[in-house]
Length: 381
Image (cartoon, rainbow, N blue to C red):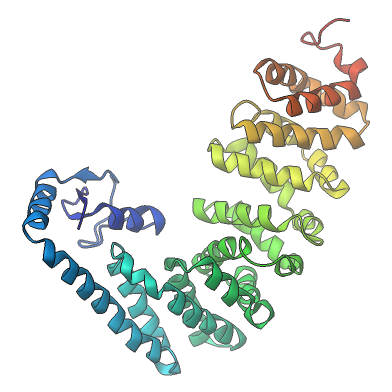
C-alpha cells in the first residue's frame, strides 16, 4: 500500500485500488463490508501513510522481496485456473475465481503481466460458447465477458485476438449486443468493442449488421448506464465512416434518440460526442431527412452551441451547414429563426470562434438571407 485512503465505512485501502473498484468497475459497495456507499469521498489516512513510509525507510531490502512474492502469489493460481478453464465442467467456477483474483490484485501492477495471456484464453471461450446453445453457455459468456472487461491487454494483443478467425471475437460480441437479454452482458460487450474498434483494421468495421446498430440505439435509449452510453457513442464515432454503417445507423433509429438525448443531457463530454455522431449522420440525405423530421432537431443542436466545447460548436455548426446546403425550404428557415438560430450564430461569431467556424457560419447565413434579415439581430446592409 502506497497511498492509503479511508472510505465512508471506515475501511482503508490503497488509493489506486479503491479508485478502480469504485470508478473504473462501477461498484457501489465497500469491498470488505459489502455495505452500500452513499459517499464516495476518499479521505487520506495520514497516520498510516507515515507508518508505511517509516517502515520503508527502515526496511529497503524487504521491498524487493515483497514485490517478488506478490508477483509469484498472483501468477501461480492463474496458471492453475488457465488450465481449469479448458475443462468444460470447471469453466464457470474457474472464470469466477479469475475475476475474484483480478479484483483482489487491483493495486499490484506486476499482476498485469498476465493480462495478455488471460485475455487470449478467456476470449476463446466466448467464441466457442457463443456457437453453442443452452443455459450453461449463456452463463459462461456472461462470466467471460465480465472477466475481459477487467483486463488491460496490450494494443497488440487486443488487435491480434480480435482479428483472429476473421474477427470471430468481434462477431461474438456483436451477437451478444443484439441477441442477449442480459443488459449487463450487452453493456460489457459494448465496452469491449469500444476498445477493439480503436485498434483493429478497417475491414473489421465495415461488415457490421443492421441489427448491431439497432442494439446501439436501444442501449442509448435505455440510459441505464453512463458507461454503456459513452461506449456506444465511441463505437459510432469509430465505425460510422466505413462501409454502409451510416445508412444502417440511420435506419436503426439513431437520430431521433440522439436528438432527444442531446436536448436533455447537460454533461459536456457526452453532448460533444453526440454532436460528433450527428454531424457524421447528417452528411447523408437520409440523415438530414430524419433530423428535420424531428420537431426539436434544430432547437436541440442550437441549445448546445456555446455550452459544450469548441469541438461541440464546430460539429453543431457543421451539422447545420449540411442541412442548409441541401434544404432550401422556407419553412425550415423560418423555424430556424423562430428558435433563435440566427441570434445564436451571431453570438458564436462574437465569442471569438476560429476562422473555419466563422466561414461556416457565414455560409449558413447566406442561404436564407432574405428570410433571416427579418430577425432583429440580423445586421442591416
